[in-house]
Image (cartoon, rainbow, N blue to C red; front, side, top):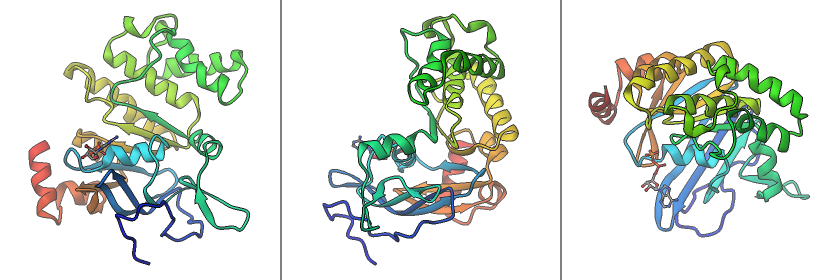
Length: 273
Ligand code: ADP
């Protein structure tokens, strides 16, 4: 069925049968005003897969993560997570209708996001930054949440910073806390949005090494927006190359980085590598 990208109502033009993929974007359109940022986007991610989104600035990569995190709503099409519509919910008649807040809160729990600018709570100590959501959203007891937070701080190498405030930490340390905070919610899907872009150059490698370790030692599904191509090559199962809100090429990191088919991909890679 054709979709009119300028159509004003939100209606699922895409299929309504639940897919088997962990994440599926099904003809997803995102507009800001008249600006079509994502144009009938289709892609899927399997459980445990690490998918990297690359492409020029403004091509829609961050918008994809924000849609998954329910920080934005689709203009058209359907996003599926684990066989459940995320952007929509099923009505009593079995048809899809736009999701309400309660539905969004429930599906959002399965998804963790780490942002470029860390976004820690400045007035809370490190430990509380990590325990806040598990206690208030998941309903974990404070003791259990703190035990888990200490394990995660150990994992990210910051056991000695439990009582520090974010302003007392370097950018790299703040980003490690943000990663621990996302993991504390035991997400099925971890979204990483240019997480090293705001860091001083000497702090980048440490954060990328931590993320490599998480990618290689956990079964968390990851969607990663990054300009760090060596990192993308190391962790990705699948690379999606974006241009102007469309995937112009996709495949294994070997294929995309060593033998791309599209001139646009070659041009982009030669500018960033
Ligand atoms: P990328 O992550 O690839 O750099 P983005 O997803 O951030 O791209 O942005 C894609 C396009 O959407 C850009 O042209 C950007 O200006 C526009 N955009 C993103 N968010 C908004 C917003 N809240 N309002 C208006 N335009 C937006």
